[in-house]
Amino acid sequence: AAVRQGIVDKVERALSDPKVKSVVICGQNGVFCGGADIKEFGTNMSGPPLVPMIHAIEAANKPVVAAIEGSALGGGLELALGCHYRIAHSKARLGLPEVSLGLLPAAGGTQRLPRLIGSPAALHLITTGRHVAAAEALQLGIVDQVTDHNTVDIAVKFALSVEGRSLDVRRISTYPCPRPSDLDALFEGVMQKVRQSARGAIAPVACVQAVRAAATLPYTQGMEREKELMATLFTSGQARALQYCFFAQRAVGRWSMPGGARWDTSKPRPVHKAAVIG
Image (cartoon, rainbow, N blue to C red; front, side, top):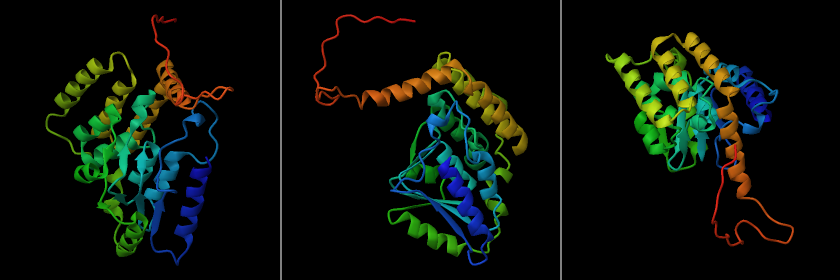
């Protein structure tokens, strides 16, 4: 919530200041944004919502450039897609991993990414949650430039160089989604493959449905469909179980005992029997 509020306040201030000609959004400590705080899920989220914040950035009348270092994952990548330009460090990684938590990218990710790189590539990334390196992101068309140098410095220079240019062609939500001639066959094939590999998981199926909305509906209606699908997933038992597993895996890597034993100093005991309860 604090991060979203900070972005909203700083962007509003920059856009209203006549001395500011361009805006660069960057992260801290070498990380652009790792996504939403999962601990906020299931609570009454405070602070400004993500979707209107990204829409406001995209609608800005000054160039907004994302300087991506470290990682841009989930809501972090969705934020970057709302910017007019994206510059990434060569070691950065980008992705929409929400499916691994039983969810889908619900801040426009399922609608903007297909419009930017096409449905086939977007389907693969969104249904698998795979992270891509900066070089692949450049090849796919997700970012505009990759650098080995200081990303923020390069982004600032770039932002100043595009001052005054029309931003109409840089707002991804206005792009028509590339429509392959075999659209129905494409989605039917992907859906069949996803159902086989998902083995009952509902989030990958919902991801396909959301991307299909991007390919067949205007942006506003596609966003409504994304919101509907997310509402179904958000309260599902599968999402709660996957998020519990997410936290449990990280807790295992931090356990310690009062006697000083820790996860990284204790020897495992041999397991002879195991049972599943539930």
